Image 1 (cartoon, rainbow, N blue to C red):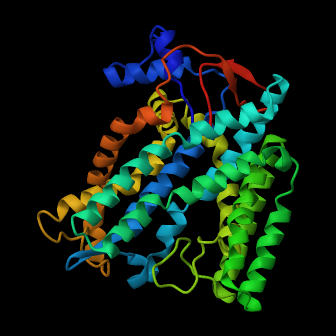
Image 2 (image 1 turned 135 degrees about the horizontal axis):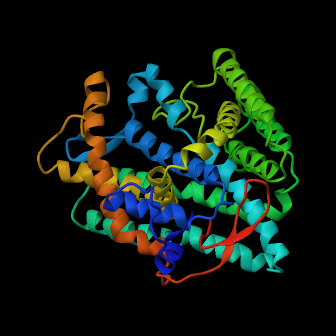
Image 3 (image 1 turned 90 degrees about the horizontal axis):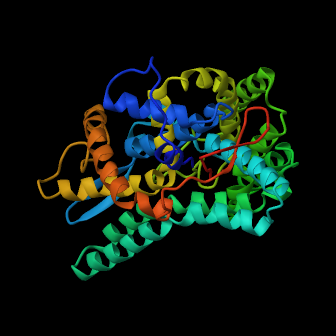
Length: 412
C-alpha cells in the first residue's frame, strides 16, 4: 500500500498556477505535487484496480438469501450461468499478485542494498499486511458469540463468518509468497505453471483425492507472483511480452473451457462440482496470465492517465487503505443485509438471485454497500496505519526502470 500523507502534510507545497480550483482539486494537486517524478504510478493504479475489482465482484455475485429465520449464501451465477463474463471482469487477483511480486522483489533488492536484514524487511512488510486483520477477527469473534447467545441459527452464523473471513486465505498465501521472495526472485513462471498442470491432470484425469488441489493454492498464485519478479528484472518491459501473455492466456483459457470441461466462471459457484478459484485450476491460471498481459499493455496508458491529479489522488487513497477496503467489504455487504431485514425481505438483498430483476436491484444496492464500507474505512483505517504519527520519513520507492529514490511514501 502507498502512504503519501506524511509527505504532503509535513511538507506542504504551493498550488501550481494551472491547478484547478476547488477544495477537492487543491487537495489532489497537493498529493500530485508531493509524489516523486520517478514513481511508477501505473503500479499503484494496477493495485487499486485489482482491489476494487475483487470488491465489486463479490458485491455482484454474492447473495444472502433470507429463508425463514436463516440466511444462506447464493450466487446469481448458479441460476444465470450466462453471467459468467461478469467474473472475467472482476476476478482480478492475478493482477494483485503480479504487482505484489514486482513490488516485493524490488523492495527486497533495495533492502539488501541498504544493508537491511531479511528478518527486518519481512517483519515490516508482514506487520503492515496483518495489522488490520486483528480488528476484523476481534469484531467477528464478538459478533458470532452474540448471535449464538441470542438464538441465531447456526447456519446463519456459519454463513456470515465464512463470508467475513474468506478474504483471509488470500492474505495467508500472499504472506507465504512474500516470505519466500528471496527464493523466488529468479524462479521462472513456467515451473509453477507446470505444477498446476500436473495437479489438475491428477485430480481430473486420474481421480486423485481433492485435497491434492491445495498444492495449487500456492503454485497457482506463484505464477503471476513470479511474473512480477520477471517484471522487476526488466524481462516484461517490452510490449511483445504483454501481447504473448494476453493472446496465449486467452486462447488457452478458451480451449480449457470449451474442450476440457473447466467452468466458464472464474469464481466459485455454490453447488458447482468444480471451482476455478478454490483451489486455482489451470483455467484460472491461464486466465490470470491473460490478465497480467493486459495489465502490462495498459501500463503506458495508465502512466499518462495518472498525470491527472484527481485520478492519481483517488488511486493513492485506495492504496493507502487497500487492506482495510479488502478486509471489510464483505462486512459492509452483510451489515446492509442485516439492517435491511428490519424492514423485510428486500429485492436484490434478501431474495433469490434467479433473474434480471435481482441483478437490477443489486446494482441499486451497490452505492449503499459503498457508503457502509466508507463507514468501516473511517472507523478502522487507523488499524492499517498502526497509529503511526504523521511525520516525514524517507524510504525507498519503486521506479519504472528499476532504480530507487527516496520519497515520503511506503509500500506493502
